[in-house]
Image (cartoon, rainbow, N blue to C red; front, top):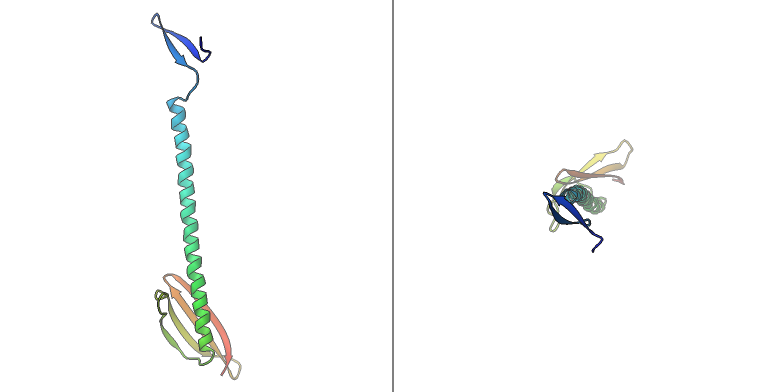
Length: 126
């Protein structure tokens, strides 16, 4: 006879029952643990994807501000507007301020996209 089979008496008759396998309770507990792990994994993934998107926005805004700053250092002027495609969701604003030092001006470039903002300052000779 098979070693994995045991006889269980019940109302004067015998039923065969296997010793190996999982009960319904064990399967439900395993599914609950896997479900909790998947929820944690998905929420962590979403959080990190939002961080990556924000860092991409800040990087692009910084590069656009540096480009605008390079153009302004030759002829400083106050201006505002939007960048051309594909960066049309980024706006800029430039300021020219007198510095406390004679013959030097401060150029400020602010680039915005949504709630993110990058500000660059540079001193140039007038």
